[in-house]
Image (cartoon, rainbow, N blue to C red):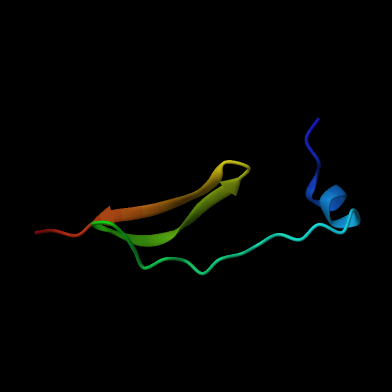
Length: 49
């Protein structure tokens, strides 16, 4: 059973929050959509050429 955020905080664990990247390869990052145990998901758009 996964720990809730409250459970994680009560055990003294911290959560790392990185700055939103401006670009990932040819994509311009617009915003964060979600995060979880496997990573972070961003909404990004490819710049027109």
